[in-house]
Every structure is written in C-alpha cells, then in structure tokens.
Image 1: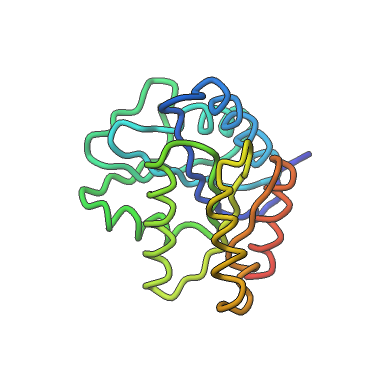
Image 2: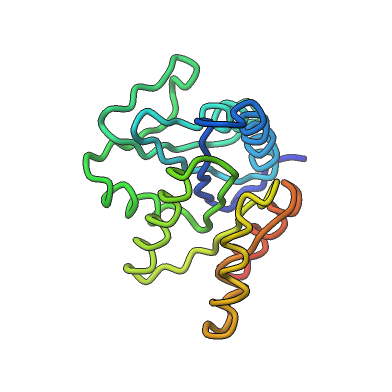
Length: 186
C-alpha cells in the first residue's frame, strides 16, 4: 500500500529497555513498518539514552518520515543518520514540542519511562488546549490498569472519554483506532 499524501502525525512512545526486550523490539519494528506504509509520520521522544531504534529504523525502511525530539545527551547511532532531530534541554519543552507536532499519541508496551513521557506530552497538550487522542496497545495486558481506570473513573465523569483514550489488542486495531480518531478530530 502506498503512503497517503497527508497521513497522520503520531507520537509513538516505546522503550526496549528492561524485561521483554526482544519482543518489544519486534513489536516496535512491526508498528513502524505498518504505520509508515499507511502514510503516518512519526514523532519519537529520546531521553536519558533511550531511543526507540527498532521503531525508527523500520519506519524509515518502509519509506516513512520520522522526527526525534531529544535531550542534549542523545547521540544518534549511524543507522539513524539523516533523521530530523530537535534537541531541547528542558523536559517540559520537549513534551510541549512533541505535543505541538503530534495529532495523536500511541503507546506501545515498554518501560515506565515511556508511559510517563506519554502522560507528560498529553498533559502538556491539554494545558495548551490540544486534545490529542491516545491509543495504547494492550498486548499481554500491559495497560490493563489504565484500561480499568478509564472504565471505572473516566467513563462516569467525562463525556466522550472514548474519543480521548482507547485500547487496542493488536497493531492493525491500533492503526484503525488512532487513524479514525485523528481523522475525526481534523
């Protein structure tokens, strides 16, 4: 499938640090390829030496466009030469920059750091009046606690919460949900 002219700009939060590294790396590669082939442009946050390399290399290999927002300590490996990178010293400034760029936020199973970063970007956007939808890949129940929170706490008190946060079971479902939410928001 050829990329569309105006695919969504999606911030992807993923980490291959910690237990389950090999499976997470594979999941990142699959997601990068799948999304890039559908025209998505990806934005990735790189901080504290954590760079979602499998996601970025797979997306680029599939013809996708990737932009990195990084802290000053990030040094890109040679495989990522030519990737656009914004370096910002302050974490809040990085969160705000990702929020400005992204039309939707996607969380893959990973470390607590990537989930924290996603929440930081989402919060920065809310402060600025941006309401980017969030879709989390709930593989192996990685986001089951958040899913429970959404059902038990958000649903009774926040009208339209299902347009703000959703959960997917596989990469195809993840793409379907985030692309639809972004399209509806445009």
